[in-house]
Structures are given as C-alpha cells and as structure tokens.
Amino acid sequence: MSRMQVNDREKTADRLLKSSAKNSYDPEVDIDWDAPLEAGKAFIPLHRSSLYGTELWERLTDEQRIELTKHEFASIASNGLWFEVLLMQMLLKEYYDADPRTGHAQYALTEIADECRHSTMFGKAVARVGAPAYGPVPLLKSGGRILPATLRGPSAYASILIAEEILDRIQRDQMWDENVQPLVRMVNRIHVLEEARHVTFAREEVVRRMADCGKAERAYHQFATAAVGYAICYSLINPHVYKAVGIRPRDGFEAAWQNPNWQNTLHWAGEKIMSFLDDAGLIGKPGEWLWKKACLLRD
Ligand SMILES: [Fe+2]
Ligand SMILES: [Fe+2]
Image (cartoon, rainbow, N blue to C red; front, side, top):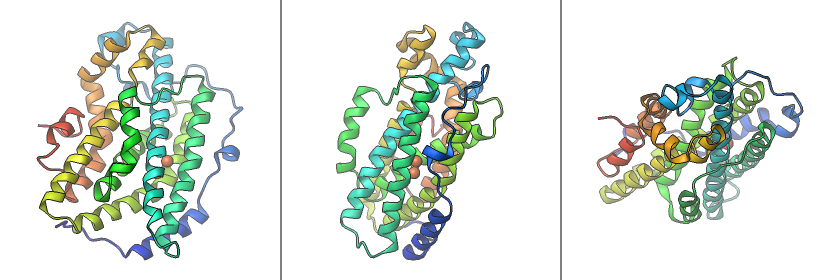
C-alpha cells in the first residue's frame, strides 16, 4: 500500500477549477508572436544541449551551437505537443465514463482545454523560431497511436506525470535564464504556471489508484510506467536535429547518449518525479533496467 495521504477528490477538483478560472493564459493574445528573436541568444541553455561538452560540440562554432539549441528546442516543444495530444486522449477516455456533474470530471475537461492551448502555443513557437516540428521518431509515433487505448489506472496518470514533470523542470530552468530567447522564456513561463495544476491532479490520481492495486497489478504498472518513462526520455531530442549543424543523426545520437552532461541533464530533469513515483510504489524491479537506460535511475 502507498504510504502517501491524499486529499478528497472533489475538494481538490474544486480548488483546481477555481485556480484555472483565475489564472489561465491565451497564447494567441498573451504572447507577442511578432517580436523579433534576439541575435546571439540560445533557445535552450547551452549547457543543456545534448551534445554540450562532447568532441562534436567542441568542433561547432558559437553560431552553430545556438543553431543546434534552436533545433533541440523545436524537438522538445514538438515532443511536448505529442505528449499532450496523447494525454488529452487519455483524459477524454476517462471523462467518457465519469459523472459529468462532478468537479473531478469538469476539471479533466478543463485540463484538456489547457492542453489544447498549450499544443497551439508549442506549434506556433516552433513555427516562429523557424525549425521543423520534429516530434518523435517513427517507431515511437506509431507506438503512441495505441497508448491511449492500452494505458489505464495508475500507470496512465504516472505516464502523464513523467512527461509533465520532466518538461516542467527543463522549462523552469529556462524561464529564469536571461541568456535564453525571450519568446522561449515566455512560452515556458505560461506552461509552467498552468502545468502546476495538472501535476496536482495527476499525482493524487496515481496515489488513489495505486491504493486499489494488488501485487500483480503493481508489478504491471511499475513496468508500464518505466516503459513510458524510457520512451519519453528517448524521444525528447529527435536525432534529425543534428543535421541542422552538419552532424549525421546517428553520430549525434550516439554522442548524446554517451555524453555524461546529457545523462546528468536527464537525471536532473527526472529527479522530482522519480522521488514521487518511488514514494507512490511505482518504481520496482519490473522495468528497473529501463529507468537506468533512460538515465532516470542510477546504479
Ligand atoms: Fe501542457
Ligand atoms: Fe499538462
């Protein structure tokens, strides 16, 4: 059984609905999409680039390093959008069976509405910086098609949380960084503010649903959560981004996954969510090797 306490479902929903009514953004009007990009500013902090510190990095000029961060930003944002499209489908599936009179069901719809605006915002941001919407590699994109139909219970909410909390840590770091493009900082600020509610919602659902699981079910959810966690980390940087600076995708991919700086970045991005998942009983032997491969867990 989980050692964690959780609030009453309707009380939480009521609080989140009130907060959403007070504090929501419309990227169409709250972001100045016509503002010029600032020359010489990176799109993600240089030390968070997947190649930072590698031999390939040393060979790049300052301009190429900034160019690479632009494409890495586009990959992270378009994958963030992909995660959102999947989680909207999962939430809508939950809503289908819910009582529409409850605050809980109404908050699920509110969250879907938030994610609709976020996906629009990420799409506009990628277009504005002038990079491709890389999204996930084809294998993961195909896998994503069956995910909303197959994931259920605590691992469905845990999967949502991993995507949200890893992105949250990356974006919080950037929104305060004055060396990062103002447009990126604004997009991240809006996202971080609205995602805080989603994190509360999903965390409580994980705890509630784990409390109802038997031993075999817990093992299943531990493995399913690890598999999704691995897919999320693996997808963040699409290897095609490296082509933008003349590096073969395979070479860039191999260098990134062997890069201790990138491994540390992934570990750091996952620290908060991993500690929660551990407390909630979702980290176990099944899937441990996947957590390690994703750099989220260390020996
Ligand atoms: Fe979002
Ligand atoms: Fe979210």
